Length: 279
Image 1 (cartoon, rainbow, N blue to C red):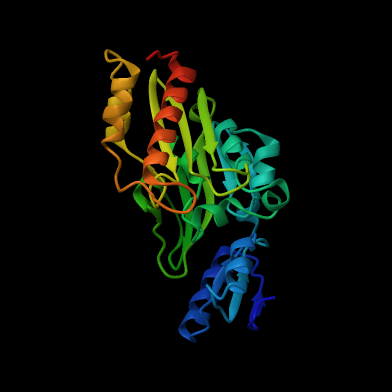
Image 2: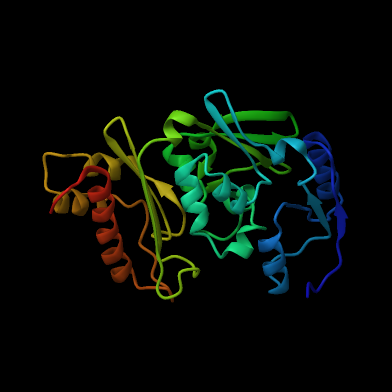
């Protein structure tokens, strides 16, 4: 049970949602945007989040788009992970979504909720980073479309009142060969020791990771070493592991040493799957 009362709002447009958020924020109501709500509910029950106003964005048409427009795939922020998985027009994103929680939860968790959430894994962002996707963000000045690389640094960098409206991906990149693997300590639906997503584009392998460090990332230096095909796979992977952007996590799910061991093996699996690499 959530131990506090809050007001509920369901705006019909992006402009209405942002204006409402800013007004409530000015009044000290600590508003939160709501799409799937799983994280808000869980954290509120644990007294880890508090709000006096919830703004439901599921009634905004732009947030509910799931379609191909010419050579682009458009995913609304309020689309559930289950919908993305079932439609399958972006195979790598569908696979990444399949690894998040269980099916019942995926029917509620949304793309925007996962990417913008407080839980550090944010696995749905990995395919977006690998395909150089754009995001559409609603804010005080209207809608803006920018590369995800401009606004994602450990998490989506949103200004007060902003929210993720859409993710836009080039179909050509979404159709490239891919590898996606989630490693857990015990249960398949547990939080990951790590999730590794890889994409082969123009004979070069791109890699993005979640669960290794305290945030998801794609690192150019890692890809540079992995694509040095003149060297054996084991040497390439060892060099790549020296390029991690932060210390490897050491927590109840697994020690840093164990995570490194699992990551090394999973990187080899990715190279083998995408280029037939041998040790």
